[in-house]
Amino acid sequence: MRSIAIPNTDLTVSALCLGTADMGTKISSETAREMLNTFGEAGGNFFDTARVYADWVPGGRHASEKTLGRWLMQTGCRDRITLATKGAHPELSTMDVPRLSPEEIAADVDGSLRDLGTDRIDLWYLHRDDPAHPVEAILETLWRLVDAGKIRYLGCSNWTLPRLEAARVHAAHQGRVGFVANQPLWNAAVPNPGAFRGAGNVAMDSAMRQWHAQTQTAAVPYSSQANGLFQKLAASGGDLLALPGGPRALYGQPENLQRFERIRELYEGTGLSLTQITLGYLFAHPFPVSAIVGPGNLDQLTDTLTAAGVRLTPEQTSFLEAA
Image 1 (cartoon, one colour):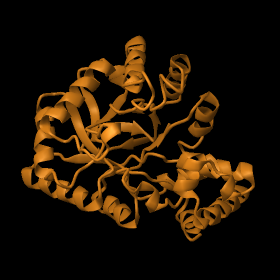
Image 2: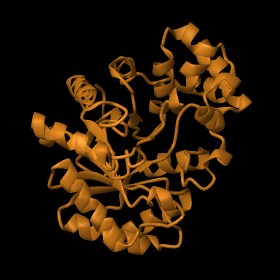
Image 3: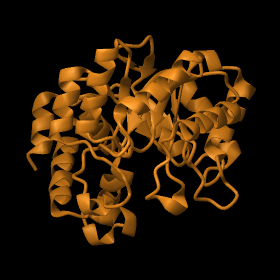
């Protein structure tokens, strides 16, 4: 599998990052084990989870981290992979209450270390932000955990561009390594901003893409396949109204039907699959990109793995975006 070097680190990660949010709940532990093994055997070495994953399932609190931790213990592959998790997410019942105090951040890190069965996290992301908390104070808290050896490198998820830049500037002034990776919502579709209101999600836009190109900060996008949007459109003959409620709320705009038509033209002209085109679009950008993928079964994982070496050309990327 093609590899990506993350600037300002010694991490070299696979172009695909395996998301594990549903492992141990929606995806059974046995199937999860098979998928984790298959991804590793294909050359994948980058795994993504979060402290909050599966907390929405009754009895599933922290199930994703625990499932991944059991697999790491069973296989003994911890030193051969890059392990990423996220913390400081609000409680799901009180999404408007931030959890960015030093005590809450430290508790999440310690809980992740325990459930993952490891003594260090290679890449730890702040899962949410709160503009009321100064970036300087947040980074100082995180650097104490780095200095303690619990975290190797820092990232952030769902941070706006002004906050990303403020964090970059402060780290430079302090002579420290700040956020080496950003995890936004990003895919080949056009998201509906109104669907994110109150949820705290931040999507990649043209200004953020320019910032990534200028700073060469790695992007590790989630929802990289738009919840299977284009596969669903292909199955329905391009009927936006046939989309399930969640994808329709996020991506049910006419622009995405136009993008689907462009993707279908690329498919017919190149022989690339829908999966290869949508992920190849992300990999075509002029900064390091490792796309988080969340297949629900082995067949979906096998299909996703075919995209690891695909990059659209600049002409193909422009053609798609012109829709």
